[in-house]
Length: 116
Ligand SMILES: [Zn+2]
Image 1 (cartoon, helix red, strand yellow):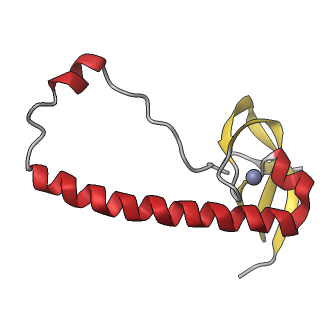
Image 2 (image 1 turned 30 degrees about the vertical axis):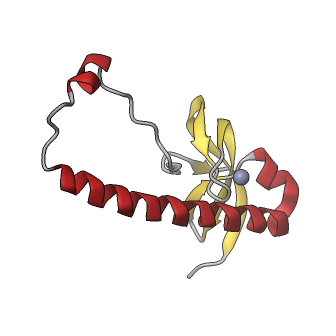
């Protein structure tokens, strides 16, 4: 496992929404983003709060997010069992009438960034 490094990197888009790799918060990331790298591998963008708070406080936020993800995983396991028991999507006409939903990215996509 390579050592972690904090660097700024330039992306291809001017501005977009990203998810902080550490705390999971959505934030607007500009062309130049604060990134966490493992060796040459970009792991993800860091939000301004995690950058400003420093590694120790960012680790506290990362642990809180990890706990949130564990709870979400447990809820999804329960939901999966309940959906499985449905057997079919009968009665889904309401969802069709509302139209397809645009999927929202939950995880950051660090590809497309070049180290500065
Ligand atoms: Zn953050």
